[in-house]
Image 1: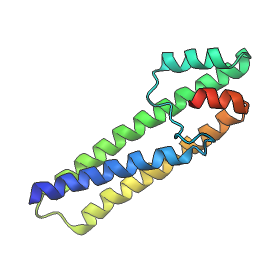
Image 2 (image 1 turned 90 degrees about the vertical axis):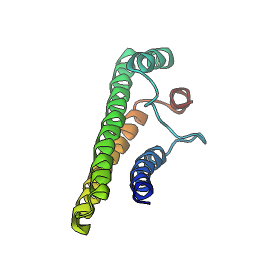
Image 3 (image 1 turned 60 degrees about the vertical axis):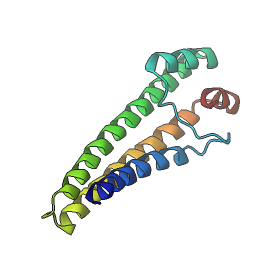
Image 4 (image 1 turned 135 degrees about the vertical axis):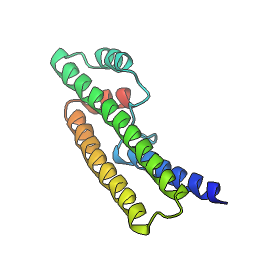
Length: 138
């Protein structure tokens, strides 16, 4: 029974992290905006193909790389916090306050990262027109 609770805690933390990122995009297309599956090379090639102005393309390319880094960073931080939550769950003598501290850390990481993510998305959108945005997010 104890293992089931541990997996539920870990799954819960992972679910929260992955469920919130796509909802920040405000994308006009039905799918969620995410460039995280792209590698840097793939992203730069897509930007170069989509945006003819080299100055804007450079800015959008850099912003996209920031989003990739933010996504990777958040995944790593959530994995670390999940490991802490699992370790606490396995420790019978852990206190409620210790678990709450881990949850507070998770909330802080999530809020900080999602705020940065939002800001970068809107900075990127300010550099492109609607047609370019659609091509970048499809």
